[in-house]
Image (cartoon, rainbow, N blue to C red; front, side, top):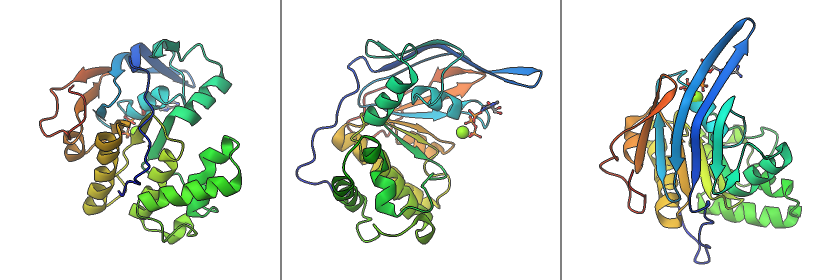
Length: 251
Ligand SMILES: Nc1ncnc2c1ncn2[C@@H]1O[C@H](COP(=O)(O)OP(=O)(O)OP(=O)(O)O)[C@@H](O)[C@H]1O
Ligand SMILES: [Mg+2]
């Protein structure tokens, strides 16, 4: 990823980071209640690149959705610095999500009828930035992920790797402190997945953006500075990954 000379320092998450304690989540479908998270304790510090692994259905996406303020736990606490995320109302949570967090999804989740730049610009438009200014910033961001020659393409006119670059640009346009990526390389071939991971890790090491990545891929997890596993509804922290990138905090 090319970095503009004027790239500002990454905004920080609060110095104490994002701290989840005793987080539980249960779902009730018909007569059956299933507890997916059974008391998750997990801290994410500024500058971490944290990989979350665990079997399919273990609750990784559920956990990430709670950390990313897209869902609420059944009980437990989630603190960002001294702010209690669970006491915030939905408007405050949306605002915090929009201003401090970026999201990257396995299936890209781009809006099919919008061009690349309009997809990237959306978070800014939600903030009330003018379309002209949002376009300028979106094109700049697309150039940073080497998509400057595809700004008017719609998702169906792009390859999977290119769509994920657009997804990264959209996640970054609001200058988030923390980026959540749920299996960002799972829909991509190996080489393209490696390129996407390189971009994400460079954001972490060069710009200090905190990264949380859910992955099934050991190779991806090994590149992160911390690795945890979600098993039976709780978090197990593994030893720090041996070949983590420079700049990541030790686990
Ligand atoms: N909205 C929901 N209502 C009921 N059950 C749900 C809901 N969302 C998730 N679940 C259940 O919670 C469990 C965990 O789902 P989750 O998507 O978090 O798993 P995951 O670890 O991300 O799996 P994968 O690796 O396959 O993506 C699953 O058994 C799923 O059926
Ligand atoms: Mg999942």
